[in-house]
Length: 309
Image (cartoon, rainbow, N blue to C red):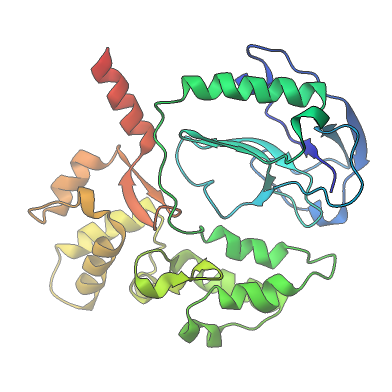
């Protein structure tokens, strides 16, 4: 696999400071599997002809992997920086350069001696950039985000790659949930359309799995209320229902609040309305930390910086 990149965020410091970078590149026709798709670095999609920059020279014979990551891991964390896509042969949206907190994701496994001049300067810039981000907050990784299930509906659809929908997708669900799934691209898309807004993971021992790291569950409470668990409107509705008249909906809402509001910030007195008035601008829903409404690392960094001034 060639060490290539595209969609580079060329205005970012890692491509400019302290060393200016310049990349050799090749022009390629847009592959069929990219058609109709968008990604963070290609918000309008990939044009018919696009540029691939070279990160490696003197490509060796034999095994030469790059370490590209498809969306579904840590891209949902506030402050996350998506800086380059890898040249994935399966679908658009892979990562090759990214930062979250104090960690930098360098997805090119080529020996530094084989890096192109542009890649070497980028690597040096990354070291400088991460020095200035040494006090950034890193959110601990707990589980894959639900986006990986959507990825399976697209991964290799046009190339005959079916292992994602036939094996990986169903085996990523809790055993009792697998009976709701049909192992095909059409079945995967149907399942995602119906259940994905209510999927969660990372909270109980049953969600852990040696092969897939985590298994997904569908929240019957959130689904019955029609409240996608990552929606702020859903959180606000749970709060309203939680103080309402006794009944099934109040019970569902209270369970959702317990399930999704991080224990560290829940109101000790149970007054969710006062709690939300205080926390509204400070919280974000983060799936990769365990599907929690929790304090945003960006807010915490800003508050910490204000105390130092």
